[in-house]
Amino acid sequence: MPLVSTRQLLDEAAKGGYGVGAFNVNNMEQIQAIMEAAKDTNSPVIIQASRGARAYAQDNYLYHLMLAAAELYPQIPLSMHLDHGNSFETCKSAIELGFTSVMMDGSLKPDGKTPATFEENVEVTKKVVDFSHERGISVEGEIGVLGGVEDGHGAGGTGLEHLTDPDQAVEFAERTGVDSLAVAIGTSHGAYKFTKKPDGSVLKMELVIAIHKRLPKTHLVMHGSSSVPKDLQDIINQYGGKLKPTWGVPVEEIQLGIRNGVRKVNVDTDSRLAITGAIRKVFVEQPEKFDPRDYLKPARAAMQKVIALRMTQFGQAGHAGDYKAISIADMAKGYANGTLSTKPEVSAK
Ligand code: 13P
Image 1 (cartoon, rainbow, N blue to C red):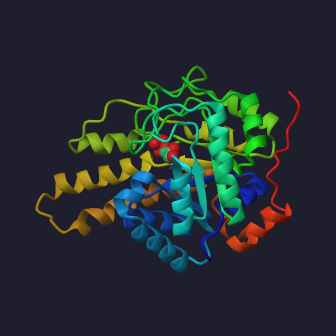
Image 2: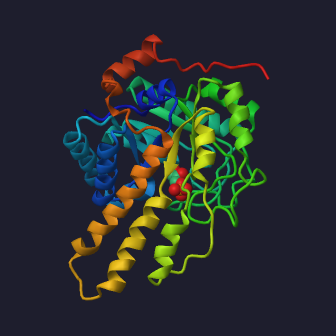
């Protein structure tokens, strides 16, 4: 299957009532781990790269690895998504490279750190939507500001500073025409999200429910959705790592979100933990090894295991064969003739 639009994956997920994991990558082994997990669980999947990943891997390497994935796994609906674009130019360059969807994170100014005003966010997001839809590319916007920092992008903090306001979410969706909406509900990027198992005082799932009530057909996106499982933390620390005690987003909370309009679930940290634990184990147990394959193979396998588990938990498993690819050119026609709606359905308060 050619690379498809994230909009198609999310429309299908809404029909099926499931969520789709969007997994971050920087290199070949991570892409391989995700694709093997998708094959084993028969899952459609979103692979995403941040600006940091694009700089690390270089755009052309990344794009051609993604093309290889699409070629090698023709049965898997796969989209290539830009995570946290900081400006119109960043989104444009991703689209010109071949990404099939972009996130315009206008919640922050182009420095990727300072919260932007609502009007600034609407303006830049709408500009990206117009450019992208003309080309058949889908757009994720963000309203409210997430916590933490990922690959140098983020306002920091706990994620409670700029929670999404449901009324603003409605206005934002109406004025921009985004295909999906990332919401700030107390999650943050990285391993250190919560100091104990989160409850409603720090993880505001009731906000997801409130936003979904107002925007029942809008695809919601949960960022910072790694669960930071204790077993992966333990492997790292058992083999010389120094992670401090920490908690992520429990899978049952993500599943509650999925029952309330969350269609895209962003996961990066869990993959990083799995890889690091596996590599540390080899280094400690077999210090005589020096062939990178001796530690990259177990690292890849460990990531594949956690991704396959998430695919099953998010409900995307088993859905790869549900539909045929819509070409990006046909997506562009759909936006132009209105069969792909960009006007959100809004319910009264
Ligand atoms: P985690 O750090 O929780 O994996 O979040 C990743 C993310 O939201 C990427 O945009």
